[in-house]
Length: 249
Image (cartoon, rainbow, N blue to C red; front, side):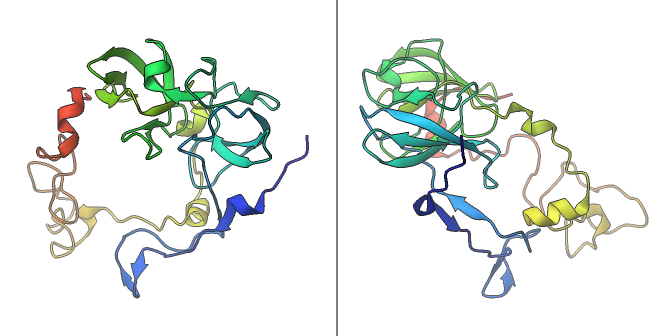
């Protein structure tokens, strides 16, 4: 089947090169090859309308591939491509759709033990959890209006049963084993060279200074801003802490 290009779903992604008003605000970014941004349907709010997979594409803006869907009412949308989704497959969203890969529904309608992705934190906002290559989250339980989801990190988190989720695990699970291979390929991604903190002077980084190879000189590694860089760095007052049943290791 020929590749279909829907211009309304693609826009040139503007370059910012890590700068605002000429000043570097994000270190390590610059250059980059011209890139199109694909509008992805994270909400999956096309309810009770059957769509057909008419294309599988690489997306330079994310680790997982995307699927182009043509709906029976003539609408076109991109979705994150689950594992084992093929050209010609039919998908849909709604409360009474079949439990199969690519279909989206509220967590209340999904059986316990099912693997899901693209899960909403806040009902109606669109999927925010589980959007990376090879990711799948298992639905462990349902109680008191919440679903207990086991994330890829091992963390167990409570999500409202009214939140939408898509059945199945995401594809392109080999993404984590990709070897960039050369500096030039990194520059095409817009990634500039990195400098180790221990190689800097003490005014530029907390790890800097010393004579020769002197190590970081601190109890724990720090960021360039003097904040802890390893271990438990999550804010103790974060409002979503109450929804975490079990911490990640």
